[in-house]
Length: 378
Image (cartoon, rainbow, N blue to C red):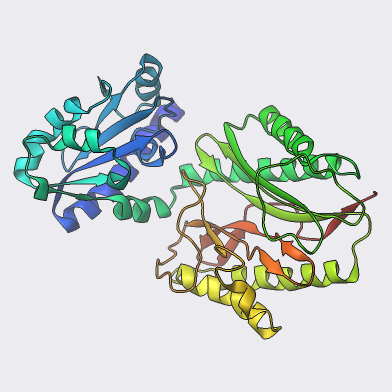
């Protein structure tokens, strides 16, 4: 009974936030599109883990939401999630069924489509056939902003993912020794995550010396004494992602490897110290970059050597980026990982970062794993 009550309250909380934004912008209906690799918006509207090639969910400014799914198992998943009883079949390759649902609302106002940019041309044609094109607009940014702030229900799931990150790092360390291949390390971590009940995991790795410039999928390279082994592990639990970024050494760390860690630890802490409600993603990134600039490594904060200084987390694993110039305001209960991962000449690419929740008091850590330069006997 409590779970049903919680889900009902969660549904009302999400829909109220979305409808408030829709009302501000004069939007009559919001359609979320989910291709197989970007399901976060449909999951936000339905709370269901869908598996098909694509699906839709529609939220009118008033009335019940509707889900459009391809497979019977997805139909059952939506019904079981309890957010909407209106689940309709969807046919390949078009979306005429969705168009029929939009037609009346399109007469009353604009229809906004989250991930409109990812719609195949044929699907777009089926959606808009006979409807005024100027009544459609993108809702991708709108949904990104709404999803940025997490409910307590969501935070509980992200905290569980954080606990699984801690387990994954310990499993990672246990596999490290000279001679083991990168793919063998990743396989062990993946097995550990499966034991914890993770639905999915995104993981990168890189091993070697100061010539390493970034991380990739695992290769057949075997570890050697003195290698730094960098990784980010990103498990998904009940739809929600968390991430841990760490670096370890095979054998005792060198002086430069220790200096590199000290630099990155100071940058991570500066970013975390900057986190509070009302700051922008760009201000957190600048706090990290300022540490590198202070020590003469500012050029390694540029796109030539790195991508972002972290990013937000939630139903998607790589949400709002932390980059100087990004003016997205981090509100209370946003979740982000602060990671100034980049190359420097000290020890090559270094990886270090922790996920946190934005609270009134600052940043609440989601991990219990300490930030240190771990090393294992070679």
